[in-house]
Each structure stands twice: as structure tokens, then as C-alpha cells.
Length: 118
Image (tube, rainbow, N blue to C red; front, side, top):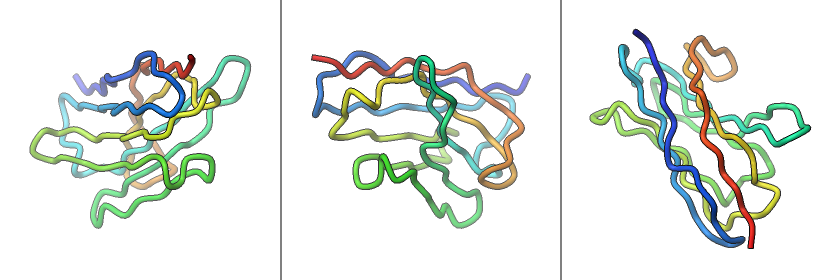
């Protein structure tokens, strides 16, 4: 069974950090581009970041540039999203997705809640 599972979400104060993980089972992540998305209550889902499969090139939404870093650990079959300097507006359910290229995804995880609040 092909599956993506996110973890690492939680409650953090403004200015704090979290590291999200996207772990795959049933397939090898290094053959796929992996994207991170988020959806806040009452808002549409938005792309946060993506890492390509071959060269591991990365891209970020303007709202998170300089604060978030996406990386992959092929030995662990996991992609990470390091989130620093978190703001209340980063509060959302964060999900990962896998596809052949960034922007076209075939598999989705269930998501993990991130809440930034004092």
C-alpha cells in the first residue's frame, strides 16, 4: 500500500520552530518530487515548498522564503520541512504530496496540524 504520513506538527509560540516529516511507505521517495502544502480554516490550500526528485532543487512560496527549508533524507525515505520564525499566520494543516515533478502530484498524506499561538 502506497502511503505518505506526516508528523511533527503541534503548538508553538510565535518565533518558534518545528520540523515536519513526510515519510513514505510502499514506494521510494527519491524517485519523486515532494511538495508541502497547507490549508488554514476558511482558506484554500496553498503550496508551501517543493523539492524535485533528480537534482533536489527547491522552491518556496514567498510567504515562507527565508524561514522554511525543505530537504530529503533518502536513506530514511523521508522529506522534512524545517520551519523557523513561525508566525500566527502559519497556522494550518500541513500536508505532503508526491509526484513525478513539482506541481503534479499522485499521492497525498493526511496532514498534520501546526498551531502558532502565544
